[in-house]
Image 1 (cartoon, rainbow, N blue to C red):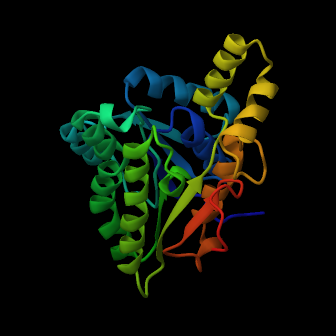
Image 2 (image 1 turned 90 degrees about the horizontal axis):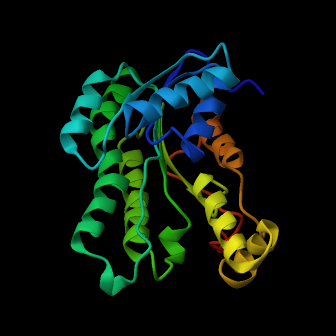
Length: 264
């Protein structure tokens, strides 16, 4: 399928690995020019080299930015060219008991998970409206509603994203700009791979056994009973980035394997 995004320019925050990198690759495969982002110059450079190795004809560049630092974000914004597609993907989490989660950890998760998208959108969104085309996609998490007890601060930040995305979408009325949220579930990112490997070694099990136990005992509400691949999430994001998804606006698109339940 031709998604008609050839020649569009996409910026994906937090895209040197995981869902962000898979999304950059998926967009590049469709002919979009992609701008990668990571915390360090070295990680960005490595990601660019990796993507070009996979797709030699890809148009790819990148900028480093620390989203815990507003000055670093301002510098990034000043470097960016005209953006057609903004993927607000960068995120961090601390898995801690509620009573032990410090104010600093709360603030840092909101700084990165929420304000990163706010700051980028505040500059890029008006430009999209002025040219009457654009796509903004926020990446939330199943934790926005499942709320694991060791991820309350993270879950709160991911829930806040839903309100921001819906509010921005309301400002697009009558235009060809859309704002949506994608909600991944448990996804087999590099971090999840490491979790499985560590648990398998510690418990004397195979990675497959650990994964099965996780969905049997922890993420019991999942319908697919497995980790989604980063590519599966990226394909959903890529479609929503395209002109073909013009009728989808102000939506929360669940790609969480059914773990959140409900009929909408």
